Each structure stands twice: as C-alpha cells, then as structure tokens.
Image (cartoon, rainbow, N blue to C red; front, side):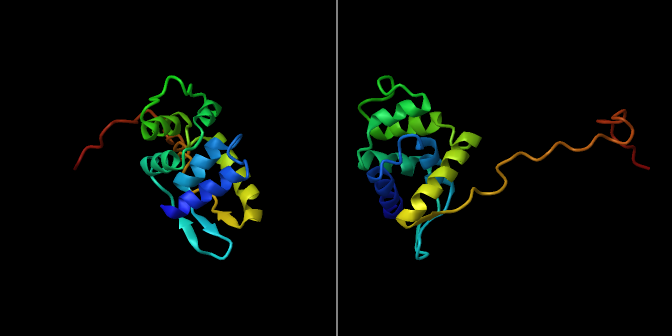
Length: 145
C-alpha cells in the first residue's frame, strides 16, 4: 500500500492529477506500477484501498469535478466514502480512462516510474458468426437417438 501512496504523491507533486484523474484511478486499480529499477510499487489495488489512500493523503476533493461529480453532494464528512463514490463515477474501465492512463504512463516515465499496459481481456469478445442454416434451428434441441 505504501508503494501506491508513493506513486500518488509523485503524481500530485508534479501536477499530473488534473486532466488525468480517470487515468490515475485506472493505473492504480488495474495496472502494475514499478520503479525504473524494477521494484514493484503496486500490482493493483481495490477501489476501497485507493479510496483509503486518497483520504489518508488528503487529496483535494475539487478533483472530483473532473469526472462529473459534484463535491458538495457527495458524503462530505466521510472522505473515504467520498473518494469511493468518485472512483465509481469515474468509470475506470472506460476507453477514456485507458487513454488517460496511457498518457499518464508516458508522463511518469521520466520521473522513474513504469506503468504497465492495460490488462488484456478488457474488450468483450466478438459475436459468434451466423449459423450456416441462417439461424432457423437456433435454440432447438437435438433429439437423442
């Protein structure tokens, strides 16, 4: 957990959160983050762990507006719940989040961090080809002999 906090602190110090919040969430949750020397900082965290880290680090709640959340309407007293709601609203599995994470990966590389590519399997499988009979017998059970 300390590794993800180190990464988040570096991203915040270099003003990379604004404009990349979805990407920060996507990278923290679903990608491997290592230092340039190969030491693994994070192999991915849960939403709850990320929310707890953002609360502990006292991330500015105004970042929430970037993902369409109104900071005034989300649980103002419980910051962990607040950040959990923001993560949920950010759609961290969306193509926009993946694109922002890819941009962020390029921006943190000179800072000594390597963010892995997105995990495979994120796209749904293509639909099966149509049946040779035009789908006439689709759903019919074959008789046993």
